[in-house]
Amino acid sequence: MAFQSYTPKPITDIFTNDTDIDRRKCHRTVPMRVLALGLGRTGTASLRTALKELGFTDTYHMMSASVENPPDCLMWQDAFAAKYDGVGTFEREQWDQLLGHCQAVCDWPAVAFAKELIEAYPDAKVILTTRDVDSWHASTMKTVDWRVNDPELRLVAQWDWGAGLYQPMLRRFWDTFFKGDFRRYGKRVFNDYYAEVRSLVPAENLLEYRMGQGWEPLCQALEVPVPKGKKFPHTNDTDGFVDRCKARNRAQMCNIAFRALVMGGGILAAVLSASVTFHRLGSRFTTIRV
Image 1 (cartoon, rainbow, N blue to C red):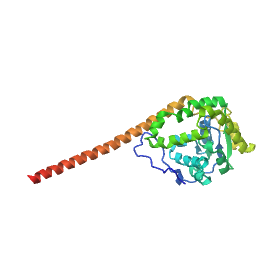
Image 2: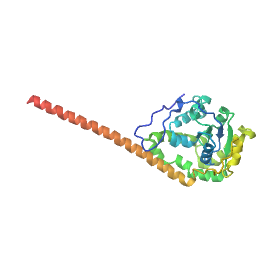
Image 3: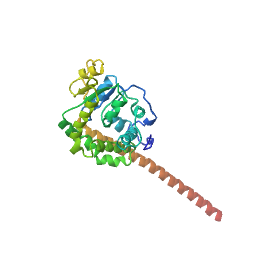
Image 4: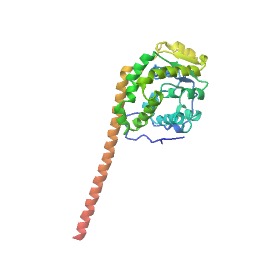
């Protein structure tokens, strides 16, 4: 099932390092072992790094779609269409295509499909990262909600390949999951969501985890040894979020400018070539007449 068709990455996109993998042609290559279903801004980026350190490779995260492989957004849009619009189906086969290279998944947009992922991968351990709802809401307002409404991203998405895939998916997820108004409904959705996940997962298969608890509870739940001499990672701090997003916008703007330069140069070359040809033909015609 495919709605929006896949288009290859332009060869002129030299200012970003995105990969260009069409997941609709992929399949599962490693077992899914961990579903980390806590909402974004509860330490999911740190958890991703920690899971990689523990050998769970790869761990899917929103960054997988936003800055690593933008064509993933096509399949996320398929998943949204199936669940929320009743268009087509998105089942284990499709999840294996999208996430088949990963042993773990975390962050959004995956949380919009918590129930579906739990059903698709019943043997996976479930981790629920959480934090105080008020501090979570304040952090998310300054970061992801800002990004969703970033006018610069909207503008860049009209012209850049990667942004054009990511921004519509991000907007769809945000409006769908948070009922079109994160500021108003965010805390309510947070509480309802965590209650739903707790109701779906048997207690013996669920680890509720807060950043700061260190390696021990995580490793115990996942039945892996604690890394010796390594601090638990801390990544994706709020202070650097906006700067990283703006840097991404600038790189994509450079892609757009470079493509315009190359295309403009090609058009100019064509015009000059045509002009020279016309001039030569005109000279020959004059000579013949003389």
